[in-house]
Image (cartoon, rainbow, N blue to C red; front, side, top):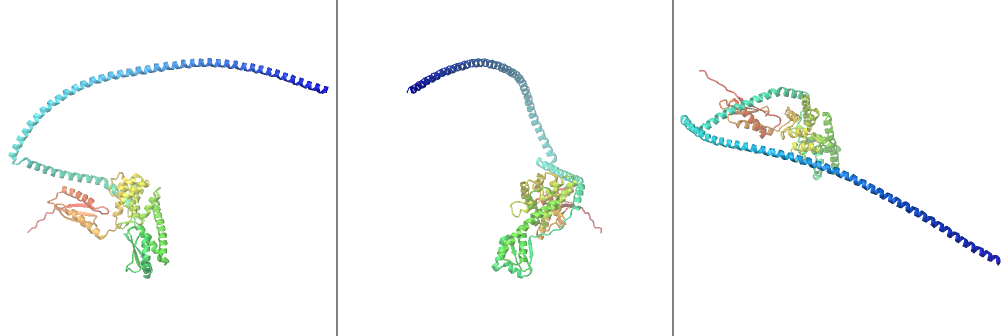
Length: 517
């Protein structure tokens, strides 16, 4: 019991001692924290005072710098204002000087105007006096010449007109002779070289295609039961199939040469196969279209390769190939364009021009004819449109537009293309013309020549490529012959359509004859 009590007392005493020790330790810790807090507060106050002092010092420094900057700007502004004031002062002085000068000029002009008015009044008086003298002289002359004023004017105008006609004809003749002397030698040389270095086979006009048959029995198979086969062919190709009494042949007619060629190839394929029915017809037409498109592309590529044409748009190559099936006056257009390109290139080389560009212009000059049977517009308009669309050179575009005189040529290459086009069309055998249009053209040429006063007879010779006009020598003098030739030339150009060139020759011959008895 005593042990337990003693142990309890010891435990209580230990707890009290521990609590006391904890109190002492807590007391010591609080005093240390207070001292540390006090030190921190003192350091913060010191830093705050230093910061405030530094801020005040920086503010004074910035204020001083801003003051100096403001004073500097004020000085600069003052100097600018002074300079502006000086300029305004000088300008004001200048304006004052000009004002004084203007006032002096105005005074001088007023004096001159007054002098001019005085002279004008004097001239008016002199004019009235002179007119009265002229009228009196005219009356005297009319009495002496027994001719009034109107008759004298008419006679004077007749004399002047005759003199001017003679001088004009002489001037035209001299200038033409001079131009011929200057151009004839070089032109002959260039054209001769071009023609000698190029030759082309003759062509014939084809507006229809003829397909041969192995037998007459094949005509019935092409027609089919109730005409279904021939209708299917015409519907698929867009052509007209003509079956007549001509033995072992049928005719394919169409204005579009591409469709006509597709129909011809399709018919030949069907005849060779022997099975002719609507299903086979459609298949044969599709295969023929594919073959013709390949042929067109290859023809265009071959033409560009043979001529040495550089990079060219694929669509233009196709248009060039399409001209293989296009004819004009019986002349194949692809052959014609290649011929023009070759002649233009040769002449350009002779003259020292860009030969590649000249060939390109010659090849594309009739490119519009590849589509003129499908689209509205002339082949010149369509050709220029496609050339612009596919980025051709302006020289090529002008050559296309000017080779028939629709627009003025802007360069020498355009003139060469027009000359080569004429050479290609005018050479013997190049083009075939219908007999009716040929006779009408000859009659029109002779009618134009016979329409002039003093013309005795007009003859169209050399297949209409030359017109010879015989005039009455008593009614038409040499000077008027020149004027008649030029007027006939202008009328032919404006009124007729013809291939190549037409030469106009006016002949005046005086024959004196007597009979001895």
